[in-house]
Length: 299
Image (cartoon, helix red, strand yellow):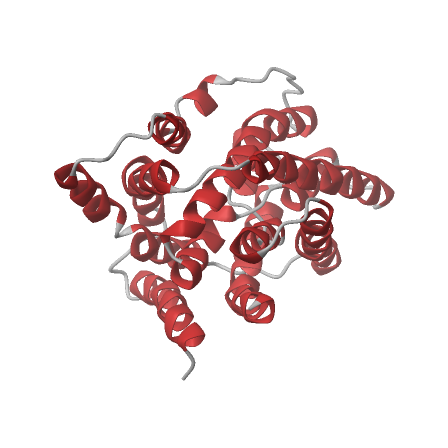
């Protein structure tokens, strides 16, 4: 077995382990929320700080948040145009558009870590900064626009409280200051960040609950989010002259499955939650198949 599959297969196994544990009632669906909270607030910030503080920063990295934002904006324009031609109800149209926009970067993170190691995490985190910024601003705006309340107020407080964002900022400051991390502190951060892949894939397995409804609309969303994102990732990588791991991270993240925040925003603003849940669940199983294949092709 090649070294590539030796790294990827354990990630896939952990996903199905989470699903099986839910099926035999050891885990519940809601346990996925707790696992992801631990990842998002504890383990991932530790990894992010280590990666950013130790990577060699360059002007190329400044393009990453811009690329993420452009992928979301272009997919929004395409999804908005296509969705309006389908004569959908506002709630379903909102979920349709958001599902086409938001990248499930949390899903591809374990694959990126397994394949490329900690060095790629710096690229991933800076790219994801643009993704999260768009989700908690523009994404909220779209959800509010099509929600039952019709509000158009953006709350930036949630974004400013995100631990990975602070880990990113502190990592950049530490990097530019050219400071060394004390060995004891580095060991603590390493131990804290190590469970990230394990906990993330177990959580995704808990969430997995596919329901095939509105198949035509689901296929259209996947075409825009995954195939459209892939085309944009390739195009921007060529345009900005990205190479190696940096290029691979941009392409993989740009073509990531439908983001979990599609369901979160749909729930918050009373959009079509059933449609959103179907999008997220089915795209998960697709991601298990196509993300490793995409990484193999890029290699």
